[in-house]
Image 1 (cartoon, rainbow, N blue to C red):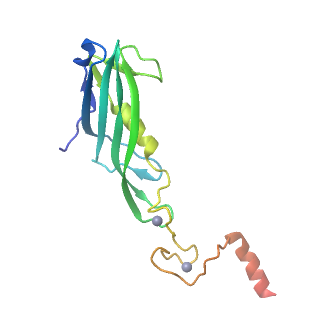
Image 2: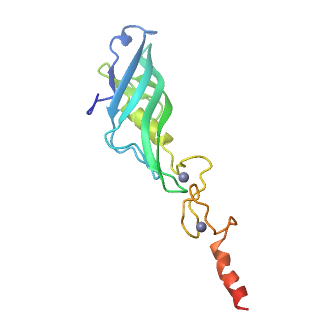
Amino acid sequence: MSGRRSLTVNVADLLRRPGQQRDASLDAVLDGLQVLGSKVPEGAQVHVEAHLESLNEGVVVKGTTEAPWVGECRRCLRAVEATLSSPILEVYEPHPSEGETQLLQGGEIDLEPVAREAVLLELPLAPLCRDDCAGLCPRCGVDRNEVACACGTEETDPRWAGLENLRLDD
Ligand SMILES: [Zn+2]
Ligand SMILES: [Zn+2]
């Protein structure tokens, strides 16, 4: 399973009468899924699991979007990678209401815009390698997850550094 595929689903079979149901499992490579602190790696597949059900004039889609992401820990700068999962719930109809429902056209629905938005909402802006990451020492720069440096544990606010020097000079 590689290469570019689409998240378009033909739902003509469901539209014959309301209440028809079907599951769909789709994968596609979507470009440009990136926020400040993380992104879906280039060429990685976004996976959509969807349950489709027809209405009088449309289709309801319930499911989840999954995608791998990579980023950099905001405290220790080490590479972080994980998989995100985000719920989707959308109504597709021939005459969609702006911002509320999606377009159903030619017996097809396109899950890409919805999957794209779901991934972008879920990508972490400031990832952590783990919740209790100790980060880098602000003085000597060692990774405090691995090394206990001699700088002490008290937080030094750089604004007070000047005052400390003044006291030493006295
Ligand atoms: Zn970290
Ligand atoms: Zn240190």
